[in-house]
Length: 412
Image (cartoon, rainbow, N blue to C red; front, side, top):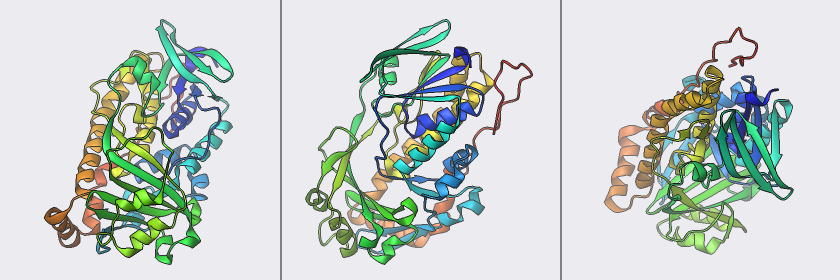
């Protein structure tokens, strides 16, 4: 396929691979440049809500995801003392939203996307290719990469920075301040399911709310493992996604008698914890310049308190690919259209996540008020309905098919 139909994608994470698939299905060639010399199944569990599940299903991922994901019946919300506050019936998602709600290990989702990408002849994955620089010219963009194998240049019609929180494409394009620490540390671990209490093996997302800390755990890998994530107020910062942690530092944030014995028993189980610092960024007014744009955490990192970080990147990919399919000879205009469609929604989700950060971590009388509202005033059905604006989102329809054979055909 001609270089003029080639889109360069920096980053082979969830967003980058989803974009590559969506582009290939719309008649483009995608060259994915990944700085890591090999892709590894790292990371924590993530929640695939209906808004992004329908995108993945449209890309052909349904059967593969069903083999590794879990479809939870509900989100069970408790306070730190163990009192049940509400059950949110996300198991109704197929009937309520027309798409399922899954939980999955991030590495499993990446492996599914990678397997699909390998089946598309118009997707090339280049490992060990760190984007160092790029230049815009009349024919598109040329990217200079460096890696263990030396340096190399790649050219295409456009460049998409899907290279995460510390995006090099963003740094080159915008040059703004680095992400700011959010004052939270997250610890994660995976436990064999047989090591936890039977109630914690159920297909349920468990959410515990406490003063300055909360706890989330649910089964992944078809129920064989339990994903555990503990997030607490913490001024320390660490570099990277997988710094070593330990049980003692975790338990300090979940003290007796504030936290119920079952929660503390679960936190004592793991022999190994990994930790990372949560970072945040204010919304950008513009995130595209000519034939270069950004996607996912590179432009709008999400605090995890709405479980929408991966979902927003997946949505971005669907909208961006559709915009390019509608403007295949004018990527600058396509990227302006994409940005216009995505800016308000992603800003609203960022704002909702920050609000949940405050609500989850209340203490004292404020926490008692929150608990009463959840138990007596709202209930699970109403809490679920409050998420309609997120879960009922639909990707854009296929672009019109052009009679010109040089133009890309749209697809669902």
